[in-house]
Image: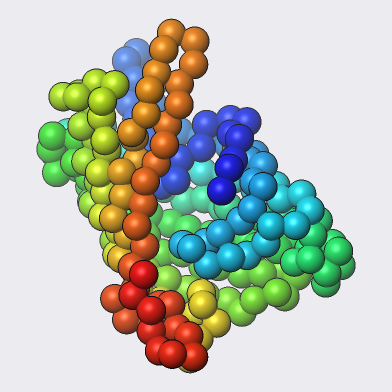
Length: 216
C-alpha cells in the first residue's frame, strides 16, 4: 500500500509530548489526510478501486511524568476514517464513508524511551459494508533513535484480541500478533524515506478460511 501523508500521521496514536516554557504541552492535536492506492487491513484486502482518502484526528494527552521517561502516563483518543469512491463506496452501496474507527489508548513509559499501551478500538462501517468489530490491543514499543540516530529501527510488538465481531468475517473471535519495525529508512537535509516493516500472524481464528485458520 502506497500512501502520501499530507500532515503528520503515525501508525500508532501520537504520544503527547511536553515542551519548554509556560505551556507544558500536555495536549497535542494531530490531523492528517492520506491517499491510498489500495487499502489492506492487516493483510485483509478491503478495496483497490477508485479514490481512497483516509482522514485522521488524534488528541494526545500527557497525564503525568516526562515524555520518554519512566512513569510517564499518557492517553490518546481519536478517529480514523476511510472514504471510497470505488466498489466499497459510492460506486457500490452508494455511500462514500466505508469505515469509521474510534480508538482510545492508555500508556506508560518504562524508561529508555520504551512504552507499553493498551488500546480499545471500535471499527464500524457507516455504509454497511461490514459488521461492527470491537477490539482490545496491547503494544510494547522501543524508540531507539537516541542510540542509533538515523539507523533507528523502532521495534514494536502488538497483540490484539477481538471482543465482538470478526475482521475476517469468520465464525470465531480472533487473536492477532504483529511484529514490526517502525523506523527503518534514510534521511537527508531536505527529504526522508521511511520503510516500515511488519509481519501479521494469527494466534487463533484471525485468518479463518475454508481450510481452517491460516497463521500467516
